[in-house]
Structures are given as C-alpha cells and as structure tokens.
Image 1 (cartoon, helix red, strand yellow):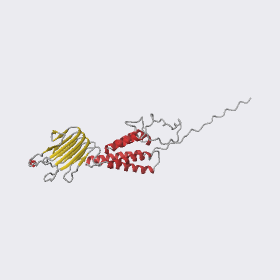
Image 2 (cartoon, one colour; image 1 turned 60 degrees about the vertical axis):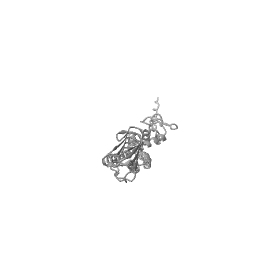
Image 3 (cartoon, helix red, strand yellow; image 1 turned 120 degrees about the horizontal axis):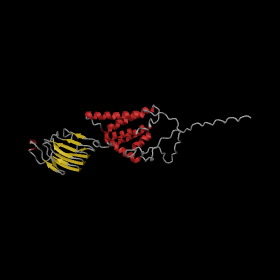
Image 4 (cartoon, one colour; image 1 turned 30 degrees about the horizontal axis):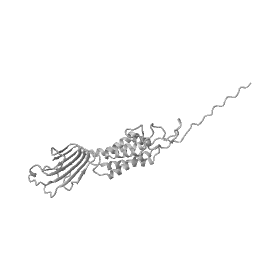
Length: 307
C-alpha cells in the first residue's frame, strides 16, 4: 500500500507594501504642546524637532517682538489636530499595521540650516552687545531669511526626505515677520533704548519705545540763546522712562503715566508744572522754558532729573 504524497508547502505571501503616506496636514499638536501646540504641529509637519521651533520663536521674539505676533497668527490660523498623536484625522484611513514601504534617508540640510541660523543670530547679538551696533529686528530677520534661502538652494541639489518642505515653511514665516518689522515704527519693539542727542539739530520731536526701559539724555543740548522752547515727547509702553535735562534749563514737564511711580526732580509729580533751572547760568530766569517735555507712559516708573 503506497503512502499518500506529502502535503504541499503553504504558499508564502509577499509582504504587503503601501506607498508612503502623504504629508500630514498642518495642524496644532494637542499632545506635544507648551502653550498652543503650534511648535508641535510645525514639528510634525516638517520633521524638525519642536525644540528648534521653540528656540526659533524665542529668538524672533527677542530680536524684535515679531515672534510673538507670528506665533499668535499661527495659533489662530492652524486648526487643532487630533487628541492623540498618530490618530488619523476623520476621513483618513488608518495605515495597516506592520506594513511599511521603503523610506528614503532624511536629508541633513534642514538641521544644518537651523544650526547655521542660530549661530548667525548669536553672532549678531554678540556683536551688537560688544559694539553698541543696533542691529534691529529687520537685521536679525533679514539674516535669518538669507540663511534659510541658502539652505533651500542646498536642498535643491540634495535628496532625502523633507529636504525642502520645512525650510519653505520657515522661510514663509520669516518673510511675514520681516514684512511686519519693516512696516513697524523703527523706534518701537522689545528691548532697552538709550538716546543721547548732542545738538538741537539731532533732537527728535518724539522718542518712542515699546517693551523695555527708555533713557533720554538731553544734558548735552546747548540751551543758551534759544529763540523758542524745544518740544520733546517721550512715549513708552512697558518699562521705566528716565529723562535727563541740562542743569541750567528751564523746563515745563507734563507726565501722563498709567501705572507706576513718577519722580520729577526729586518730587512726586504727575501733572504739568514749570521748573526753573539750577546754578549760576539760570539766575536770569525769564519764566520761559527752554524745554517743553511731554511724557506718555504705560506701565513702569518715570524719572526726570538733571545732568
């Protein structure tokens, strides 16, 4: 009696393969977030670490305050993502478990570009600190946009995943911030400001600040022989205001401060008042001021003194 033939080996099915999923939609991440999930959403969309996005927004905020505005705009414009990371959005099919197609290596260009960007901004900040050069928001943002543009050129000649998408997003944000900074008044922004005009010609009608201390030193302005009073205005949002006047100058001071202590020549004043000069050069006081000083502040202390 012959034995039955051995059973045929089971058919081996080829492993399933699906094309790589399409790029996710730009949404705010509701799990990886500190404030609104904007950086987490940008990281998920571009593949760039969210920490680098956070550092970039902080750098923009310190450079000219535009980082805060851009972040708020993205917070308003970006829709919220799903509750948990990796959960498909409504209408999107879930990826089959255990199936993954060949994935190209990630391009190093975006990471190198962000590294060069942070180094360039740090060098500018260091030069400004050591030399007193006022780079300004436009200088910082213009340099950042130049570095990102060079990264895009390099990405055009290299392969790898996500070589250009993230840089394009960063470039759009920087271009928007640069446009806002160029349209803003040059004297407004974030940071301490000090002005020391030397002559009447150098004197401005209004000195404006944003967030930070503002110091206006007028002690070197020559007041002898003036035909009429010099009108000087100071406007600051948040921060202390200090104005230093020539010792012999007769001044009329008007202070309108929202919240904070006001000290005018050692006294607590928050109203319009005339102050004669001090010293031998002021003995011929004619009752007419050499300076008409107006100070409008928001939050902070105001001090008017003599040099």
